[in-house]
Length: 211
Length: 165
Image (cartoon, rainbow over all chains, first blue to last red):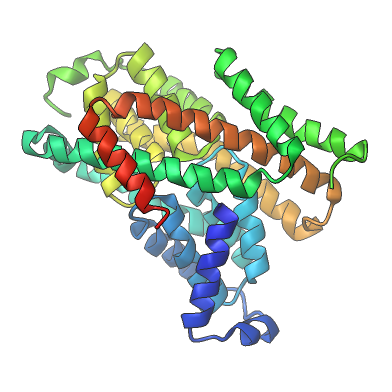
């Protein structure tokens, strides 16, 4: 779903944006962006991710591929896919974008930018947040927001499963994981399970059963 | 600091312990925000009883309305409840650090070798299926906590259906 969603976004932006699709593909990538530009890209994206992590994707795509032209759409999608299997908030994808744009320091700059709001809301605005939380009138509204988000996430999950689970082996790994995570109580089981899943897939490939 | 009875259950942890606790969360943070929130809720609310579940839900709703990664923001929130601003910063840092270092390493690997290795592609394929299962289970768990009455179930269902339209 992540890949499907981002392809959708990318195609939309390509069609609507200043740079045409063919031009984006044939144009040479521009000079590496400055550290400040990377930081600013991160900050802007971090401030605009309303409604869930996925909303940051079109902003980063626009800044990095369309306008800044320091990465290609293919690199963008590859990075998204990579970030999907990591233990981290989705916006950690920004680190990848920053790395492509400016190496190690670029990655740092963008990451700091995109996480700055997340830290600041609580560290700086704590009192205001508490007031909102305590406001009884908003309780019903807040409960509704949570319920709505649960519904959205459930729907997104279905899309995600459809995109990622494409053959019988994926179904098998999926079911095995479901069984294990409901059975095994240890939190650390998660790490072992994910890596085992990858290893099983490797094994299947080695045995010639996969792809 | 906040003057609120609900916070008296939040333990005053050492900075190191706070950092390491959220670092551990960060290492286990698979499956997106839903799974991450479920994990934080289980350890700090269900088991640790730092704050009541109802309050957790409300704080979460506020962070969901704000931009940014809610799970990470919850970590900063809890860190701040425990040890003030520095605690909040350390908690947030701990949570994002494993993902950051891994993404950093993968970015380096990607630029150097690309993703053309079929072995890597197969490994990745397996991980994807497993992560899908993790997310599904997390949705199941958060549904149990957040959807406490019929009207909320209704909101969730309408919201989910609208995502397909």
